[in-house]
Picture (cartoon, rainbow, N blue to C red):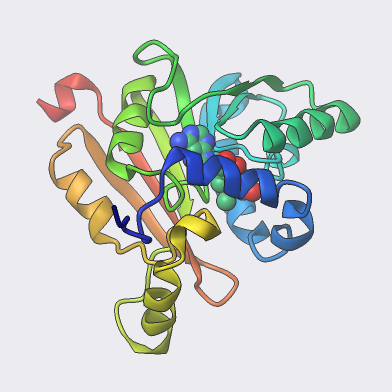
Length: 225
Ligand SMILES: C[S@@+](CC[C@H](N)C(=O)[O-])C[C@H]1O[C@@H](n2cnc3c(N)ncnc32)[C@H](O)[C@@H]1O
């Protein structure tokens, strides 16, 4: 049986990130730092200094964890134990008291009750999960009405040399562990069937506009009815 090499499975993610884990910080700290900082700043601005319970989906090695303000109480989840192991060491060595838990969990089947968190953040994750819509549905389920979902993501180029490169790389998605082609339509289509979710910000980020900050709000039930 042949398999679509642009599709990503859980097994692909687990084996790719077991390989990436030892070198992940070396390769991905600098380029993706502006996105992590922008995502953390969006979360830090919530709650007016009062504690806010925040879920970090796909926390990886925890590079974003030191960027959260003390009032942001973080629960991090990731599918990859080798990535989480590095995150746990980071939390211990930096003494990050606001990181409450780091758990192995699938973003597409979150083990939390409905409306459990004040905010959800997912830096560089939507391009990695096998089913982005199911992941977005899960994030929307666990965030409280009035809460925010903050995404940082590469949104694919629509034309030009970058689009060609992404298309070529797209055939290697399973081996890379992420999807280089990720059109905005994936988010737009999801938003179109979720009247309870509002896009409140979409902003290109450094370096070279490669990444995009996306802020979504789950409306109060009365607002979206
Ligand atoms: C590109 S890394 C981003 C890590 C971190 N947020 C950062 O900014 O460096 C993507 C992470 O998503 C995790 N991941 C992929 N699929 C997942 C899933 N279905 N559930 C939970 N985590 C997942 C991977 O294991 C990996 O750690």
